[in-house]
Amino acid sequence: MSKKKKRDLSVFSLSFLDVISCGFGAVILLFVISMGSERLVIFDIRDALEKLFQERMAELMDVRTKKQDLKQILSQNELVEKELDDKIASMQTDLDELINRIKEADFGKEKLLVDVDNLEEEVDARERIVDIPQNESDLPIGVPVLSNHLIFIMDTSGSMRDPSTGQIWKSVTEKFKETLEIYPIVKAVQAMDADGNFILRSSRGQWIPDSRVTRDGIVRAIRNYEHHSQSNPVPGILRAIRSFRETKSPEDKIGIYIFGDEFTQTAEKVLNRIDTANSIDEETGERPITINAIGFPHVIKFERHFTRTGLKFANLMRELTYQHGGAFIGTH
Image (cartoon, rainbow, N blue to C red; front, side):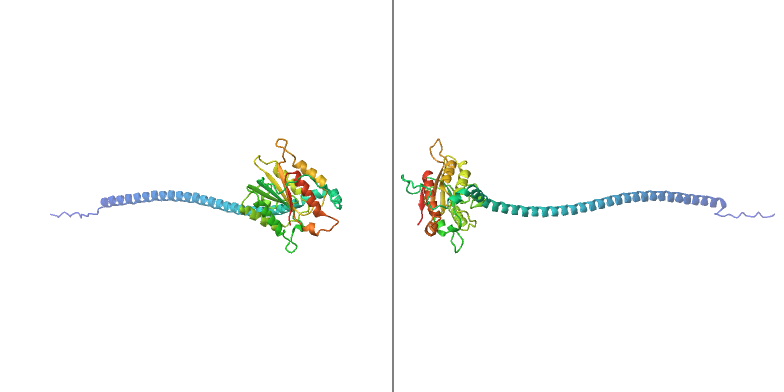
């Protein structure tokens, strides 16, 4: 009896390998599929990043452009500001020069007007005869001291100056201080030269409240005053009356003091002009401003005989102060 052959058995049969191969293939397919999906995600992220990068770069370029434009504007502003500062400085220089010219012109304006208006009087005044008859009526003795606002009109011509220093005689400033001391109440003062210029330019047309400091300051200003006025106080008198009469309040009692030593014109027209300017108030029957004068003997003592300008001054002041309620005093 023949023996049957035994079948060979193997765990790795063809069917098993097929299953394993299919499963492995499926895994690989899934892996490949998943890899493709991740690549798409990566591409999307990269595109988004590139887009974001381009946007940020555009913003950065815009910021840089704006920064550059701002720098250019600032640079232009600095240039414009510098040019403006230069123009302002140049204009200030021109303004200062103009102010100096105006001041210089102001000094000569009154003198020029007086020279033109009174040329005939200047010629006639060279006569020897004193042109004002002596007043025989009773004259006031001493200086009235009721004024509480004082205006000093100073002749600052060469004859009123010390030849060795060129400054106003010390006796003039001493008399100025003595005059102030005799007044019991002085509210305000002012000082002008014979041409009508204010000696303290910063106080032009304004009262200066009286004090010891004010008096010392005016004394220094008078002593060091450089402008040489003419020897004719009339322009100063008229300008003082015009400047302060209209603004005078009822309680203000204004007194003018004329400090001088010469007069070179004829007196009649001068008296008429001042009489019109300081006319009598119809309500009070008095003149608004009292006029006093102090004469210095320098020219009276040393003058040449044919001019007699010192005597003309003394005679004019005597009559003028009498008409305007004041007094004339000659110093020794």
